[in-house]
Image (tube, rainbow, N blue to C red; front, top):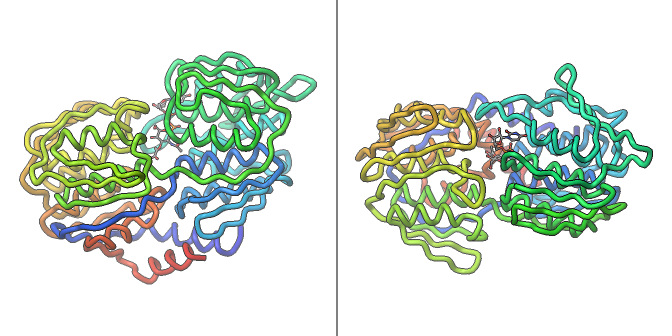
Length: 451
Ligand code: EPU
């Protein structure tokens, strides 16, 4: 691990004991710059394993999840050079036989599992620790494993490791039809990456349609892959013999964009956000309009003018183009101060309601039955000592704190730092009153992010 990366990981360890002090009821206004997508960057980094030539990815956010993925690539023998938000990856000397992925790395980042597809396709065999469940659910991998088997891989699970091997003499997977039983972002990305170097044609049916999958397809096609059907439920991949290097710019982070739009709505203060591909968040814009917010699209910018009286609206999370599960918690924070009662149903992950008890601590009136929450809007939230338990629930608690009466102390910042680039700095830049309890370390984060 290089010095800069080691320093970042130490700072990340410290974020476990840090908290944010957030003074509520301050006006915010201005413009927020939206960073590159975390979930697109992570899979694009894994996809770099498919070619011996170097891959240059721009607009990669500075996040601890990205640091961990960098560490995984380094541990496999890749060369990684990062400069601000650009990353150059050369995987020429990667050797999965001699460099095994550590349990610790894979467990700390589920997206590390994306490496299984590229490693199998390029090297003919792979052994990777089973990532297990996580804070938001059990997250099985059955569909993904079934897809790899259909492509001809011999897959076995032993002692918490998944081994996949191509047994045929030419060491190439064989194109086939893969029809998923459920829409899975991870399974779709994995089967696309596994089949780009396969012999013959693969058709994926019931593919997930998330924009991050489209971004992956665009980058793979730049590398010489032959993939059709991006953005649709049927993806066709004509296998090629090899892939080349390329340069690619990551799409803006639609979840970060949605989080800041909700920050505007909850505080009742207008904001402009850019860059954003507005079609990526149409379902969220629709719900914000139903709440009474005015939304104006202007090229790659969105201007939101919120209503002073947010109206309760129901949401049900769905795979894209439906309302994203990653914005369910932030939207619930908004509903806590709305007029009326909102019903929020989480259908993607079975354990993604942990923000409910923390929002209740702030005075929210929420009834929770399994994965359905009924939120009766209250006049005010109040500042409290609260703790985020996953990435999006921690962001939701920041949003609640922005509008609460009094000061909140928020723990769980290691979650926030995984997925929102300079979150509190962006909010402070538009007028929020937020500080970390350990200013020296925060300065260090800024320094390293500039290096
Ligand atoms: N599922 C199965 N079998 C499988 C795969 C998935 O049953 O083989 C189930 C999962 O258990 C879950 C549902 O299908 O209930 C959806 O899972 P999916 O595979 O779509 O999600 P993922 O790939 O594990 C990605 C994002 C998540 C985001 C979801 C849904 C990355 C690194 N992660 O996860 O992002 O919530 O898609 O959009 O891309 C986040 O950023 O905070 C985050 C959790």
